[in-house]
Figure (cartoon, rainbow, N blue to C red):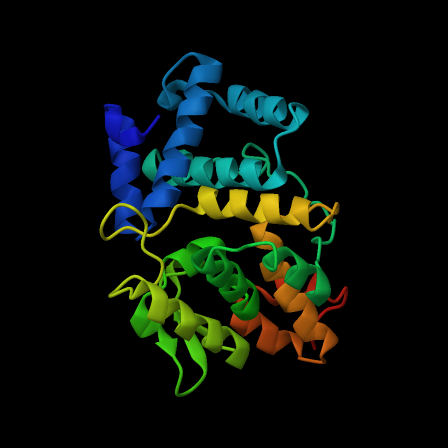
Length: 270
């Protein structure tokens, strides 16, 4: 259910105010408020009345339920902001306990596997979205929010506006990607958003592209676990295989911490 359709209690309104002050994206605001509501549903009381033991029990319940690390990590971020900044409880990391990050390496597709998948996609718009995501190492949300003005064919760069963490960055534009982007533009004639959706002024929905990718992957006979986000991991891994240094890959991927980038090579950057 959309948060817009629900009346916010006073403490959640204060939380929303604090997030807006900090420049959190609407998506992050929505996630944090949803996690607070899950806590309230579990404890059957307003979040302001939740005790330290009840909070730890809730986190333990989510871990035992098999919730992913990334999802629980979002919960911890939301609770740290709410309890320590909004309510000034100053609860320590012994209360808001963040689980240990799993060390599993990301799945990667080979270049041939990526081409075999995109060869199954007949719709030019969908194919261009997938190839742009891979060729520039983008998150799918970043691809879908690209504007025509973000494509710098003179310098062979793509500008990513307000990526994860509200950070802008530049990434590479390959000649092959530029060629398909030009073919796409001639056929579809977008005027502002590069990949507009059905609603005017809004980009395509990521769920549609995820579905296109899954169908194409199945048709290509590829059984390894992979989603659209795997294209981004594959971009980084292929750069590393071509002897690009981790610092360059970090900048292109928009990673805040080099340790995230080092997962692709199994080594740290010196």
